[in-house]
Image 1 (cartoon, one colour):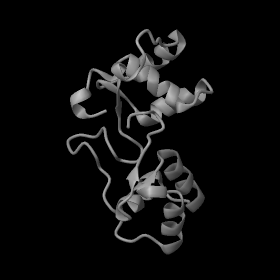
Image 2 (tube, helix red, strand yellow):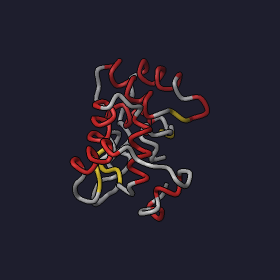
Image 3 (cartoon, one colour):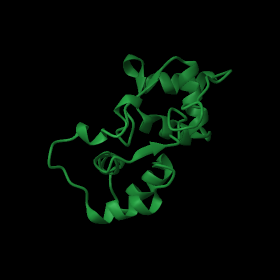
Length: 144
């Protein structure tokens, strides 16, 4: 969803969709500054043994904005996104990223896995994707 969709996230889901009260409570406890961080949303998913997409759906239904994407793609102020292309991408990393990016798109989950495999931060892995001109999608939380 785009910035213009702010406040209308629930429209992505079927009418009558509901949020588990325990998840709603956890979200409310972690939310601040008009939203919840990507990291906090993932911690909720882990605590409830849920796929992050389920927490993302709950966030949408509650009209809670996701802040500070762990890949630097959205949710920051004032720039909105903080990701910048890496100045250099080692060949082995580039090869692994391209392998996971059919059609020029790589999933957020894949970027996380690659970061772990190469012992780099998620932001560094995303910066490598930027340098390789790859689009990161879909988001694990369903933001895009």
